[in-house]
Image (cartoon, rainbow, N blue to C red):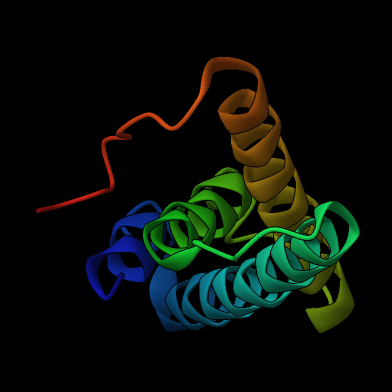
Length: 113
């Protein structure tokens, strides 16, 4: 997680662009984590099943950083970076849980052990 903001900022020009990309990436990744937790809790409550979202949260946080990576150096307001993260986190968790229901539990690339 620590290296992703730095990678997003490599293409920026100057200190201001690097700072923007770091802040946008952290905001997006944090928002993705919150959104994926909300989706996971909502789905677990509706379907009355236990919540197993630990490794999936890693993927949601990465998806927020990757989603904002293309526009990390642009003049996004904090709300824009957070909105990108919310959409990416909700999609990441929602798709993973839908695929898990359809095909059963599978091992993703983010899961270890």
